[in-house]
Length: 219
Length: 278
Image (cartoon, rainbow over all chains, first blue to last red; front, side):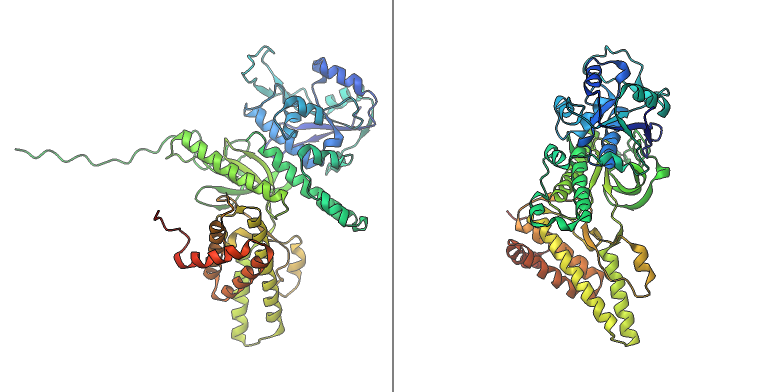
C-alpha cells in the first residue's frame, strides 16, 4: 500500500485528484517501459518530483489541465498527458515529457491520477476531442493499492499543506526550464548568512512567475 | 392628396439571447462560492478560493456583451484579458509588486489573480485626512499628527518609486488612481490592537491592469501621473501637497523621469486627451 493523498480542488470538487510521492525510486525503467507500452493499468501522470517547485505549482497545472479536458479544449490525447503538457512552458508535448515526465534517471517520483474515464473507443478521429467523464472506480484505496504493488520506492506521506511535494525540488533546473533567471545575480552579493526567510521569499517569487507563465501558455 | 403616413416609430431591438443568464460566471465557478468585491464597466470582480480551500483569490470576469457581435466580442474580450495578464506576468518577473496571475481562460473571459490583503491608498488617505481635521478641531497640534504626516510622506515616496519602476519597464498602467494602489498589510490583528490609528507601513501593490498598455512614450507615462494627480486632488485638499512627494520620488528613481515630468506640465495644461488635430 502506498500513501496516497486525495486533493479536492475548489470549484472542481466532483473530481478529486489522487497524488502520491515516492523517493529513492528503484524500478524506474520498469515503470517507464509500461508507460511506453501504453499499458492501460499505468494510466497515471508520472512526474519528476525534482521539477515540481511547490504544491501550488502542481495543483495549478492540475486545475488548468482538468479545466481544459472538461471544457473539451485539451491539446493532448489523455487527461494525464495534458497535465504533463500543462506544466511545460512551451507547446511541444514531447519536450514536456522529457522535462517534467518520468525520465530514465528519475529517482523521485510524483504520481497523479485523475478520476476520469472515456466511454468512447480509442479510434477517434485525430482532430476530434474525446469526451471524458467521472470515473467512480478511482478511489484513494484503489490507487494506493495499485501504486503500492508496482512502484518500488520509499513512499512519503503528503501532509495537510502538501509542502512535501516541493521538498525535493531542484530549483535551478526549474529556473532553467521556465527561463526565469531573476534572483541569480543577487545571490552572489548576499551572504549565506541571510538564512531561510530570504530563500522562502525567493521561492515564492519564482512560484508566482511560473504560475503566470503556465497560465499564459498557448495564448 | 393624402400625406404619406409618417414612418412607424422605431422599436428598440430586442435584447439578444445569451447562452447563460447575464452576469453569471461560466463553469466551474458557481455563485454560491463567490463573494462580489466590485464591478467596473467591463469586468466583475469576486473573491473566492483556489487550489486549496484556504487560499483566497480574486476572479476577474469579463462577461460577454450582448450588444456586440459575438465574434467581435470574443476577440475583444480575449485581447483585453490577455493584455492584462501578460502585463502582470511581465511586471512580476521584474520584481514589481503586482498580484500574481494564477489561472485564466481567455475564451470564457475569466482571470484568477492573487488576493492582496490590505487597504487601498484611497482609504488610507481618507482616514488620514479625517484625522487631521479632527486634530484641528480639538486644537492639539501634538506629535502624533506630525508622526503620521511623516509616515504618509514615506508612503508617498514608496508610491513614487513603484510607479517609476513600472514605467522604467515600459508598462503604463492606464488607470492609475489611488483606488488602484493597495497597501499590503500582512498582520492586521497586530495593528488593530493598538489604540492609535495604524501607521501606513507595508508594500505598495499596483492593481487593476485592465487598461494597461506597453508604451515607452513619455506622453503615456505623463498621463499616468496626471491621472494619479487628479485622483489625489479629488480625495481631499489636504492630500494634494502629498502628491509632490510622489513626483519627487518618481523623479529620483529613474533616469527617464525628467522628460516625463516635463511632459506632465504640458498634460496639465490641456488635460488627459491629446489634441485631435493632425
